[in-house]
Structures are given as C-alpha cells and as structure tokens.
Length: 151
Image 1 (cartoon, one colour):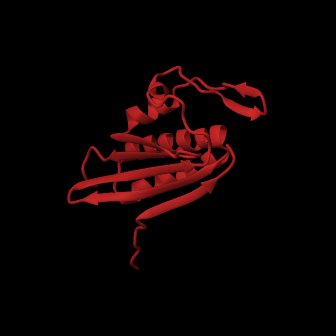
Image 2: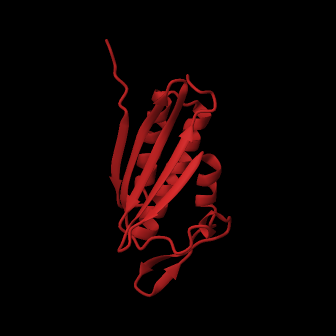
C-alpha cells in the first residue's frame, strides 16, 4: 500500500481549546515530512502560541502549514491569519514580559499572559514575519527548518 504524505495542513479556529486540536495535528504533520521528534514538539509550541494569540486578540483565524523540501533541506512554513486589530508594536512583542492585553468585554482589557509567547515563537523558529492589513487583520508567517536536514 502506498501512502502519500500531504504537503499542506490547514484548519480554522475560534476558541482557545482549538489550540489543543491544532497543535498535535501540526506536530504529526511535520513528523511525517521529516522533522525530528524534538523539532515537531517545538512546532506544536509555535502553533499553540500563534493560535492562542489569534483567538485572544482577534477572536479566531486560520492556520496553514506547508512542507518546505529543497534538496536536502526540510522544513515547514506556518501561517496564521486573523481579522483582528493587529499588533501595535511589532518589535516589542518579541520582548519577554510584553503583552498587549486582550479585550474580553467592551472596555475591559485583560492581560492574562506572561508575555513570553511570541518571544518563544521567535526563538524556536528560523524566520518570523508579520504582515498587517491597513484596515484589519494580521498574517504571521513562520519558517522552521530541520537541523538534521532530512530524516
């Protein structure tokens, strides 16, 4: 029996518990394309942080993960997009302890966060890019390559 590994994985999310659904599936997906157990666990952390943030600050969004395979280089591209207000200070979000807070109810801004999530995403990734729409929305693109090159 021949099994073809999918080259892309995607899901929509709207609730904090969706991070618990997306992260293990992302972890399994990147194991299938050749990342190590350790790198797959790091990918799950990245996905969990990005999905959680998109739910907290934007009310949900979409996750897309694509395999990146170039000769002996194996990696993954993680894209999270939302329709939220964006990030006010792109550089500050990578500083541990920074949190914009989130609005649970009109006029009530809560932090509820240690402010280390996007810093961890940056440390666990090879590249992190933000694209903000002029009106509304944010796209975060993360690239992570396998340190072993291939399986």
